[in-house]
Image 1 (tube, rainbow, N blue to C red):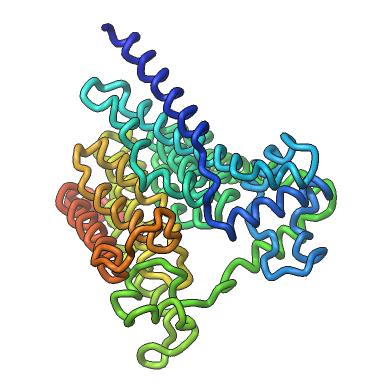
Image 2 (image 1 turned 90 degrees about the vertical axis):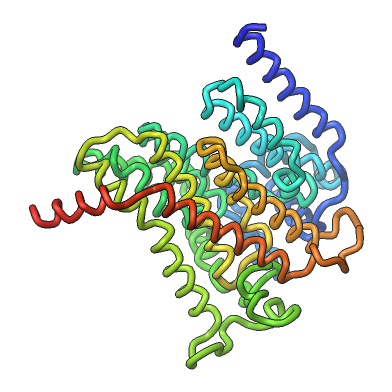
Amino acid sequence: MNQNQKSLLYWLLFGLLFMTFVFFIPEKSHGGDMGHWERWAGFIKMEGFPFIYDYGTIYSTIFPCNYPPIVLYFLKIFSLCFSDMEQITEHMKYFKIIPLLFDFISAALIFLLIKRDRKTSWLPLLLLLSPAFLYNSYCWGQVDGILTAFIAIALILAVRQKWMLAIIFYIIAINTKMQAIVFLPVFALAIFPSILSWKKLGTALLLALSTQVLILAPFILFGTVDTWYQVMGSLVDQYQNVSLNAFNFWYLLLDGNGPLYTKDYQELWFGIDHKTWGLLFFFVFSFFALWPMLLKSIRYAFQKITPDSSFKELVFLSAFLCILGFFFFNTQMHERYSHPAMLMAFLYGILNKNYWIYGITSIAYFLNMERTLRYFEISYHTFIFEHRFIAALFLVAILIGLWQLYKKHSISQDWTFICKLIKRV
């Protein structure tokens, strides 16, 4: 069997696996989240897409529509498949097909990234058989897989120096879920070697603005963009809990379910509240997670070096550390916010041939999600479902990531160049 035949067989299995998942798509999900999708899709059907952010004012609810536009575009597409609210309610489980499709897109990206390497070309299929990777879309019914795919596309394009397309996909990612902002430093450093000129920088800013305007076009045309702005601005501090079932640093620090029931504006140490401490820990951690990439990005930009495999590894490892650090140290974190860390770790593993970080992160993520949703209805009074055990797994993944970051990616050459650059200036 030649390479083309193997490739064709791969895509046939890929499609067959997707159709199998669609055929057996489960009714069960997170009732609250799927309920939001159902009501918002119905509102879009009845009132029109540009007015979706008025949902919270028209109906008396403590859960207004508070998702960025891209997810709502997908709800619009879904609503077009049905004639009325009753049909939408009856077929709501099939909305899972959309985030599931993006899980498969993520796997397809990996296949393209590794350029059909014979030793690793089947690994993307193994990713799709991971219960942790599919849990968010298939069991829970959430859309973090869509965000993850767009971020992965943006970063892959960035390291391939296709910076204009990369910017478009990054803006789409931000308009999918606001957590995409965590990837901004990594993304900016990834494209920096490609846009080191005032002309390219201006083009990049204009392209980002144009993409944002295009996404908001329906709201601008119908005069509801101010409502979108107000809703997006209200996302911060919507839930002021230390943790929202994210088994992270705070579960190692506080006893039992303390993080779930403690408000993050309460004082912790030295008159400083939990939220501020969390942000401080995150920013300090992010400095160490981004330092090697910052130095290397500057050297590559000024020496006009084309990003190599080492730089690509660094991008995905830094992205993994940033999103997992965001989840681990900050307050107000949901259990789902660590989802993109799995794909970043897998992409790093593909390039580095080391899957320890991915494996540990996936186990921790699955246990955290299952402990919260209880989808499989098994015994949760075992050691592996203990909050602190899961939090400790996340911590181990972070520590291994940092160790890999500074062990393999030496900064001495980059630092020497930066020092010479500063002296010249």
